[in-house]
Length: 98
Image (cartoon, rainbow, N blue to C red; front, side, top):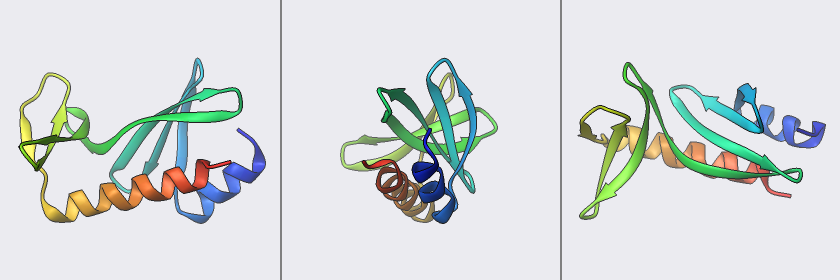
């Protein structure tokens, strides 16, 4: 990751906490997303919230937002979590843009 991207992440309060085999975990507060570095750019997966069951991704069912962790039940996403995930995702995309 280049220093310009690292500075943009830091200015938005986003940390990159782990990098393994081209994948990086980005976090802010309880929000998280995994990105894959490809040729100096990042391809992002879905954003979500860290829970006791692991990363619960934000998914949509019939126009309603849910948080779904691997091997766990889906739970309705409270408005404040939905907004936090949206802000995190928007800030992360902006920080990683070329």
